[in-house]
Image (tube, rainbow, N blue to C red; front, side, top):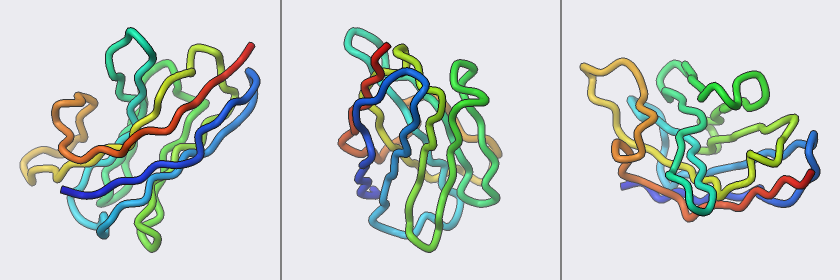
Length: 128
């Protein structure tokens, strides 16, 4: 398993921006899928954005399309989530996660059970 450490959470007003970072303990070059999930109290963990580390293709859940951007810096073993135009409903604990993608599967999953490495989470609070 990969060790993941998130940072960058905080409290902002609606319309504001935050950038989350996730540093991995090993190089993420290769067939890794990395993702950002979030979980609000009383809700299930939700996949927000995923990225294939080999090629950089990305996918987003509908509620964040056009506002959030997932990206990677392989030289720093770091995953980012740039969050713009934040809304109160974005308030949640945000988690970074990773798994090694089988060669036969070209896409990255949004299902939490697929991921076997998780960070400790960073809190994002958006006030109206």
